[in-house]
Length: 303
Image (cartoon, rainbow, N blue to C red):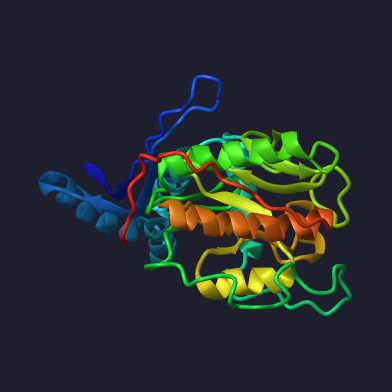
C-alpha cells in the first residue's frame, strides 16, 4: 500500500498553567476517519496480487484477508486517539488501551438519558428539590466528547480564567470549612485537583465530590439522580460511559457525570451551583461555592 492518509479533526486546548500547578497543558487531537489510498503502480500491483491469491488460495480465504487488511491501521489510529486524550485514570500504554477497548463493549449507548433508580437512596430528594428553575438551558449544541478513561471534551474549550477561578473557589471552600471538605489529587483520575467530603454519606472514591481537568477544563462529579436528571435535560453535561451501575461500579459510580467546561462567567456560576448539588449528594451538607468577583479577562463565547 503506497500511502495511508488519516483525516483528522484537531482541537487544541492551550492553557497557560500557573507555576505552582504541576500538570502540563496539552492539545487534544482526534483522528475521525481512516482512509487508505493506493496510487498508480501500487494499485496495479494490488489488483495483480488479489488475482494471483484467488488462483492460488481459496477465494473465501482471500476475501477474509482483504477484509482484515485495514485492521492494523484502524487499531493504530484508535490507539493514537487514546494517547492523544492525555493522561487520565488509565495508564497511557497499549495495555491500558486494550482495557478501554474492552470496556467500550459495555459503555452506555445513550449518555443523555438519566439513570433509572429503583432502590431507596439517601438523601431521598436532590439538593434542588427536583425543581427545574435553578438551572437555565445551556447555550448552543453540546460539545464533542471522546474517550472513557480519560474522557475529555475536545471542542468548545472553556475559558482559562474561569478554570482558574473554579480551582480557587474549590481550594477556598476547603480552607474555610476544613472539617467538612478538603482538596487533593483526584482519586478517580489519579491526577488533577479534586474536592472531597471529609465524612461522605454516599460511596464514591474516598469521598470525592468532583475533579477538574486541566487539559480541557471540563470536570467529573457525582450527583443525586434528581439533580443529574435536570443537568442532563438542560444540556450541561452527560453521563460517563461506564456509569451504568452493577459490576461497573468498580470503575465509576452510577451517579458519575461529566460537566462541560464553563465558557464565561455566567456559565461558571451555573457550574458552581451544580457542584453545590454534588457536594450535597456526597457529604449531605449544604454550602455556597463562592467565586471571586475581581475583574476577569475571559471573554464570553457564543457557540
